[in-house]
Image 1: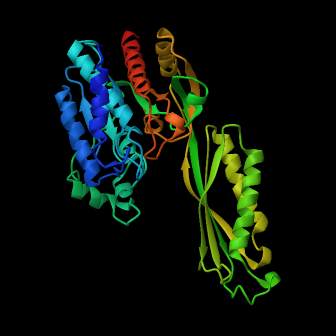
Image 2: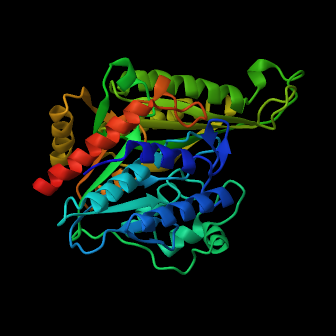
Image 3: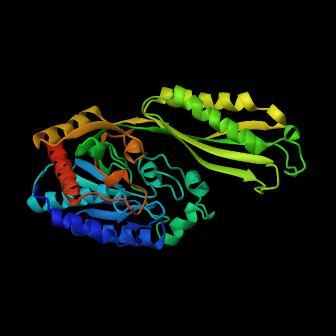
Length: 404
């Protein structure tokens, strides 16, 4: 296949105009900017010779014509608020450029290249909604219950976009021999370790829990310290204890975050009557996630009832780790070796659509470096030569699948 690097870079820049904010994009799912980007992509898929449609969840799916077997390549084009211009988009346009090259050069006559942009990967309404729908894991009830931070339902958003009522595309294990997802790393390892390609072995599991402490509001100037039922102080103590426990119980690959803390009523002269702490933690191993969750339970139990404050924990989110297909991991590795490109096997610390697809068809992910490790911010960027090398490696991997 004869790839056109200039065309790829130009397509990336064109798509970055939709929702452009400084050097990044603000393209939340089903906003006007997101819908315009999907329409642009639909037209370019069709121009590339794909049979393309936007389905009933907002997935943009293009199928290669005249073949029974295909490699599926994709990712997502929605963004976080004021996010980066490459996050997700890179993988979709890698697929588009490889599909273009296949059709133009008449390469891989017996193997098609299908391309997909999954809807709402970032979770404005429901994280991974598009890939879950594609794999038959998103029910009508799930869609009806999903809402964004403004309380708008996913059902309403789909209707407003004109997608509601359309058939929803489905993965076809009989057709799809493999799923490839190219992505920026979103972290610093490749850059720090002077590697050009990251070959993802596992996508981490994610857990999220909310700790709630309930005490009693009193005047902070007149209530003696030993008589207070201070929910805020207890929440801080539990949080510190959780951090200590995680440091002991986690693995070398574990990460955790206290992402949101709220005190009520939230006044400087009122003892907090309630406090909530949102804790998220990730690891590639299910048993480590279970261990960390048990440490949260133990920390909350240890402080429950002390100084008249009750403490409880609710476990809000549990996404299992996903191993990438060992054969496809080796295929990408072979592609890097053929070009003498430095590569690193590594886990992904972020969630991706590939973790859903991996449950149904052989799936693999490939990273290219992020400058400074930046992502989910307008400062996100990657060198052009790394973008071009990445599409070359992915195209080589597709050809290796065809040979096999």
